Image 1 (cartoon, helix red, strand yellow):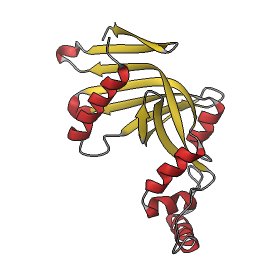
Image 2: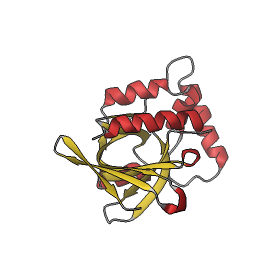
Image 3: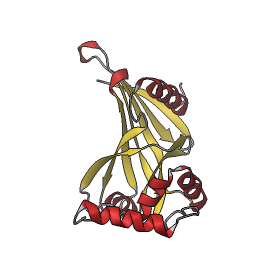
Image 4: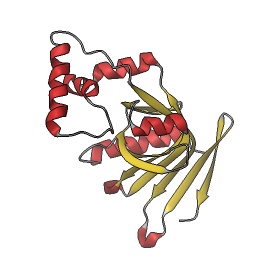
Amino acid sequence: MTDPFALFDEWYAQARDTEINDSNAMALATADARGRPSVRMVLLKGHGPDGFVFYTNFEGRKAGDLLENPHAALLFHWKSLRRQIRVEGAVGPVDDATADVYFATRSRDSQLGAWASDQSRPLPDRQTFMDRFEAASARFEGGPVPRPPHWSGFRLTPERIEYWQDREHRLHERRLFERVGDSWIEGLLYP
């Protein structure tokens, strides 16, 4: 049996070598408390046996969905490799220390943008956002930009991981790993 995280590391390393832009891009599917789905692209910012981490404004729709219904699915699709990985599991916020460490690695403009944006809310015009960005820039001029209290990350703890490899004539290979307690069982799925 193969370790699903070692296999992820192998495929992800190959994607970083072959994908032109954003090899860490993944589709994040959520559903609100009433079960209405939504999907969007986010960037993977950490991964390992404890899960897959991404960051966002906690006042936006995706965070609202995840706080109401803490289950989600991820999809990595690397077209140049003809591969995809699907991950499903429970989601929870990362701790403040983890969020602070990551936020400090972001570019200053990205940090300021986190202060300026009311993510997913209506914006009357682009200039309003740019004015808010300039106000945040002036507010933190000459010093570090702290992480906003409404900005943090989520960790998806996988319960299922499927590795899909394209094959000729749609005879694809699908390997499924499912968590059972602290272990993983591996099987195959028909294409």
